[in-house]
Image (tube, rainbow, N blue to C red; front, side):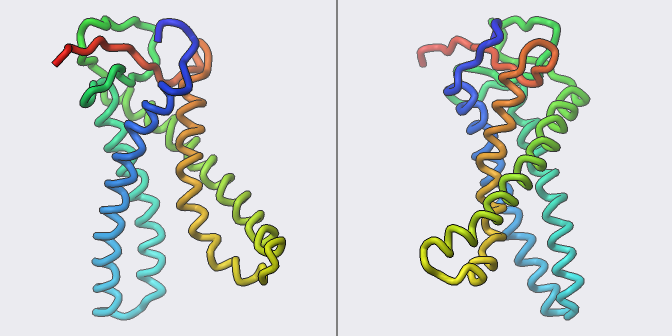
Length: 190
């Protein structure tokens, strides 16, 4: 936006524009790759090798999916959206034109600014929740050691607040430190 203030609801809308696509594509690709790895493990044995292949492949899958989705939403208006998400720039954009030319390098740099922060926030939130879970379970009167097997699921749920926090961080910074901007677009009454 032209001033340095971005409303929270606009940040949430921009984040949701990215996150639902990211989550759907990531889950679909993880299921497909999981089925393939499961069949390969049954055919060739050696579950240890395929376990680590799945773990390393999952990291690259997150990188690929977030890169593809980030590049698909930057500089483009999506269905019934009243803003366009663009990388922050010193140049001012013409708001009457609904398509913005964002170069590949600029998109990649903006994505990388998002992804490395997302990874750090997700690890920190998952670690905090994983450390807190046994105490909550013990407070509820159950055996805290039985809850440790569920801490892996916390990493999945940690991605949601981590992604939103990173979007807020990238949009609410001032001046040159801002990495993402929302440009308002006036929609036709169709």
